[in-house]
Image: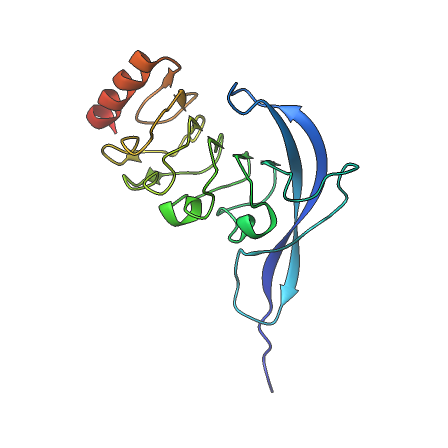
Length: 195
């Protein structure tokens, strides 16, 4: 008797649209509102993006899509291989999707990222090296991660020009929104003290 292991790779079923973000420097975005589908494969379980629907707006393609919006999907990790389908990604929004971890290696391939919103997930800890490979991020939102207990020392030091950083709405170690340079400096101090 042979046992065949089935695993899941991911497919984004995208609804594409043009919209705006809450960060002025992003301006108008061509976004994929992704519904996550699973495809069974004979291999070990992975969370690698294997395909993306191509039902683009007229004259657009995946290279034009610069923002991914994932809301109320099952997404425990940031899918690997996003950059293979969206090479010009500037914004990533994963909200209410059960995200449990985010690491430097998750962000490293997303070289153009300036917007990162991981609101209302299950993050517990953020390592101090998270942004080492993503110095251009300007907007960060970790709000409503009610299990978040630890934030690595100097986590935001690699960021060249942070504009808005959120740790609010039930984050265990701190409740703060930083939207000015002075607020951001105070947040860095508070995180070192409280988280």
